[in-house]
Image (cartoon, rainbow, N blue to C red; front, side, top):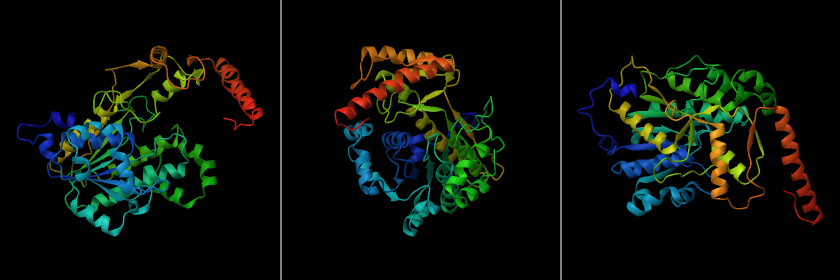
Length: 391
């Protein structure tokens, strides 16, 4: 991190010392990255005062019950074994919703956060590429605005880490650790999405996105500018991770709880569902292990928090990527996946392992028709004939 290279760190507190006695507010704590962040903070910075998790009710389950369910997952096995009481004694839930005005906070909870918290990790986001622009804007963009409004009220804010994405500027061949001009005005975007109906917005979306590929990258790019406007006023750091994959080492090697990125391709290929992938086999995708990414943002908060904020300060931006260190092509990913699937077969395999890559659109659609669609139609017809529900 260039932010550190210019400083003498001799007399600075260590990272655990910096976090000692601190109160931390986390959005997105129930997500993939948020879980690892919570686990790492509690395990390595155990003297922190408290972690407040913003959490909403979901499918009729109250935030308090969701917190209990969260602690029961495999990700926290290490904590339960080595520090069994720390989670329930140091983690509190705050009822709210990032996509709502004011983050959906009650007056009492907002006052509590304003008075108590020192560090904010804004991890919450929708990472779906096909989200309607209204939904993506309310969560990824307006949510960032509402978080900044809260941060401005906090009495003793040491650092605010905004987790963006290294793909927020996909319209550029080279993405450096700088802020690029916005694709649109973030205030106008929020206003339009609050005003227009869903159907009209969906019709206008392709024109509005322009050269950006989806609503995710579009809203994440604009959210960076919400943060950037507060340079010199709030102790913000912008982190840009690439494709976040399973853990390298902590809390255990290979932990993941979703099918995003290459994992979905490997599972679909291993089960025999995916028969063809239309892409360039030599294309390089950038991956970063989730524990490496979360450790980086913990360090970034320490770096920002141990430096006095000046009005002339720019906002540090870090690309959390593997870059040239580990280059893996799509062909290598699928080849490794097929080899692993043969050695360690998955449960409920539908067909033999495949997932071949082609650059021919014609061949790809032929394989989709013959190996995807046709078998599905035949299986559904058989199920219907047997009086069962089709797949």
